Amino acid sequence: MENIIFKVNSSKKNFIARLKIGRVEQEPKEIIVLGAIKHGVKKFDGIQKITQIKSEELNLILEQLEKNGFIEVEEKKGWLGIKIEIIVTHKGANEVDVQIQKLQTKWNQMSLLYKTGDKEKMKQSMDENKSFFPTMIFFGVMDMMMFSMMFSMMGMAMTDYVPGENIPEGEGADDDGIDFDVGF
Image (cartoon, rainbow, N blue to C red):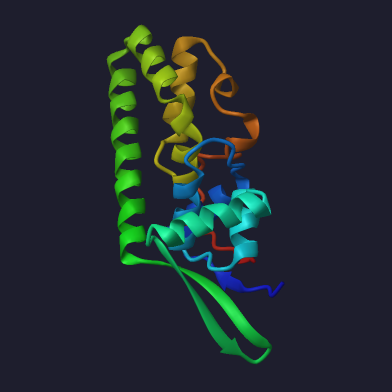
């Protein structure tokens, strides 16, 4: 396995941090894999490490994404032999954008319910959207501080809806300007 170290700029920092923290357990895994590829993770090992998807399952997901025209596999000749990279297609990039927009719409609706203070509707909305929370966290769609306050308003724990390992530590803290290297 070849290690690639690259500098993560501030626009990718939170995405990469969420990738490393998130344990993908709920659907749609395909969109999370596609999102990881779109954000520059081009090697099978890197995708597997970030998404925590088993090798066999990831291979099936990648085959399906390629079959649907969302990704392409490129073979490049290098100093050490053939290097295989997975590249997102225009169609795949558009699909990620559409799915993120749908997640953003769901989050905006939940935020609005929180601001109105209607606990019953808030709980109903959270129950209906429970399966989307890990994906929202993964893509950085939700405001973790507000998400936490939603649970506080209802007198519940966040871990009732999202496994603890999917909740980024220190989310919501002001860490702008910190760049770090990520090895894949």
